[in-house]
Length: 363
Ligand code: PHB
Figure 1: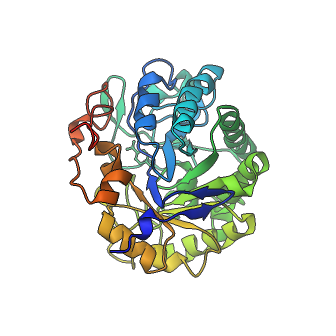
Figure 2: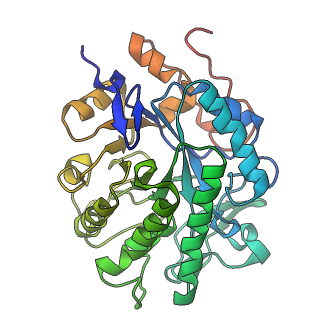
């Protein structure tokens, strides 16, 4: 069987040995001040045979934090911590991009500087509960950002991008998916603004495009990717016309000549898909985006190869399979069976379920 996943591919300025991407995965393993540590370095090092690793979502500022023990990229100590990881991955011949994150309203005063309200495009609370340091609490109604504050948000991403460069990453991915800040601006159920950042699709996509411009100013276009989840309903997301909203955003992203567009595929378990509109997968965006496409969401070796063979995607990202199989590339290559991920150890904790999944060689 021919296996396109195992063939090399060009991605921005890099040539990768395979098309298997380790998806960004929140694991909540920092211990002190959201600083990446040696345990995390071992976790990423074990997975360095991926064509590309995208780091777990990493907040660009204290305001961008929404979960306990996720790493940041805003303090000197965090930059030093990330160097442990970039050095470990590079020593194994791997490539790693940092995912730049601001959660917007998916936070809580308990997690915010000075106990402030989380910020968002509009004062609209998501449904559900948030994990704080003292247990689950209902989401609060966020504070709508003032127009005058938007440049500071863009600056947070620019500084995060600059810090990622200093930390030795190979590139950065802008997290504009899964109901976090940039997605909240894009979609019309979370953005009711009446200024130049709300209303028309041009206005709702403005922040994403301005952030992309700022990040590209640091990294150059060929080391920057953008992640979108055009069909997800996770974090209370909805848009009245996703095809138009995301079609426009992707068309405009063409002007940057990015390293890649990373799509979370429809109908991913836990991320959902609206029933009233057609799914928007890589097949929808292929004719719109003039560049490399990574698709993610519940793929197997077989369906991943098929996605590339169909011509709709160039690389495939694997999340849950990468949690449990550090040597996923090698296992795919020889058709080996896969370890099963244990959901109980996904978020938080120690090395258990994090760095102790055996390789084929070890087991
Ligand atoms: C999560 O922590 O649940 C999480 C983080 C980032 C995502 C999606 C989910 O993009």
